[in-house]
Image (cartoon, rainbow, N blue to C red; front, side, top):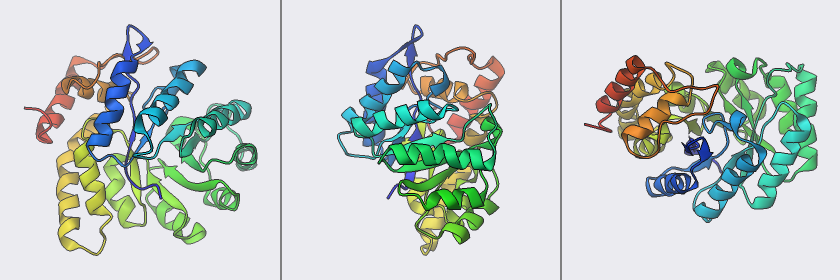
Length: 295
């Protein structure tokens, strides 16, 4: 089962090229520090500005370097159904454990369009599929009813929920039952998300606080242990300023700066994204200090 702290992995660049050496080191960093899964080529991985060869390469590197130690959930979504099918087929062929497929952005499909998009991917692949519902970026919001229809298909196993509406966790659990995997798409609300029936978070913060995020998820999923829940709340409070600071400007620019403070990767991003301002750097640095990640 996919659960716990799953990192939405950044894609490091060097002179606007994929920095494979750094990328491999990031993969092993997460394996070493208790991360429960890796998502390559997601939003945080700057998938919109990766060409097809790069997109496939980052998935391949994650599968190859992880050697089955932790699950790889490949980002394979697109607002073109044919492209999403192609990327998902590649992820399946290369050995990814699951695919994360975002709701189509920009072209604003209806609920029936969303259903047919995911059904087409489902019908052309055999890999487990997680729906990525993120209305703030895709401008469409998959309804609980549409999700329930999709859960009847063979490969649809859950959702990364970035709606910001915690009531959805209850609604989705009631409609689809406990076997439907619910993963938070927002670090800041991950504690309550898990309390309501979620089983983990696809996390931006885990890029720079992998061990803390792993410990937080483990503790927050221990619902019947008051000591562990107290630990989860303590870690959550420690990380909250960081969660918030990583979205002051467009992600992943802030988290890449935070990674540079830890010497994990450079803060280079691809246009149209740009590096964060000096003012935001101060806020991110302060949050990193508060979380005891840097001095």
